[in-house]
Amino acid sequence: MESEFGYHIIQLIDKRGDKIKCRHILLKPKVSADEIAAAEHQLDTIANEIRDGKITFDMAAAYFSDDKDTKNNRGLMSNSTADGMTSRFQLKDLPSEVARAIEPLQVGEMSKPFTMVNSRGKTVVAVARLKSRTEGHKAKITEDFEVMKQVVLAKEREKTINNWVSDKIKQTYVRMSDRYKDCNFQYQGWRK
Image 1: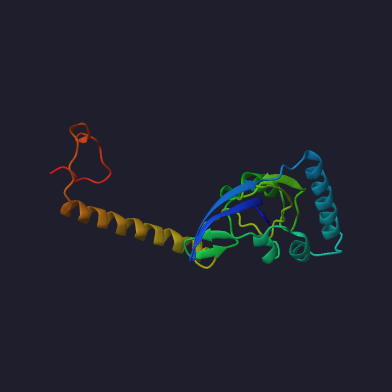
Image 2: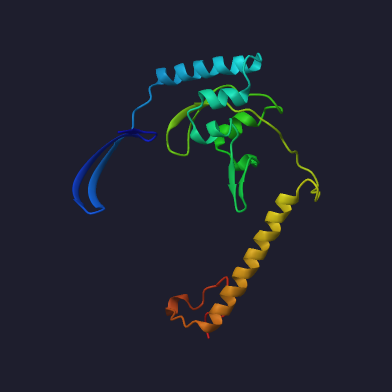
């Protein structure tokens, strides 16, 4: 069986009702330098068609991309946060190859094709387009509400956890080895 991870060989050993026992072998195909060069050339051709206005980036991503996450979002990368998904990233949160490709770009520009290893460990060739950039600035509630909200929520979570741990220390018996009694603990009150 073939999947995005490679080729699978699965052997069924035993089946009892809806429970099974099986073995699994995964073979990851090796990608040659020639195949990477061919993919870079093909992607460069597609990028040139986008620059020439023959096709939009959104349409190209939906039609040509092999990455299920960005293909379904018409090329838009998403970032998981405590509140859900967002398309905003800090440069440090991007994979290093993407950050290097995006950093010198102006809004609306596209990178040259580059090779990277994706989150699933697969070598891929990609191009990236910078949709928008927010320069460093003094925070304003109208522009930075989500960021401010995340900071406040993080502080409240930390405060709640600290209060909970401090309360639990008072109610919990902990036997401590003599060699740890003089340690500097984050929370005080372990020794009574």
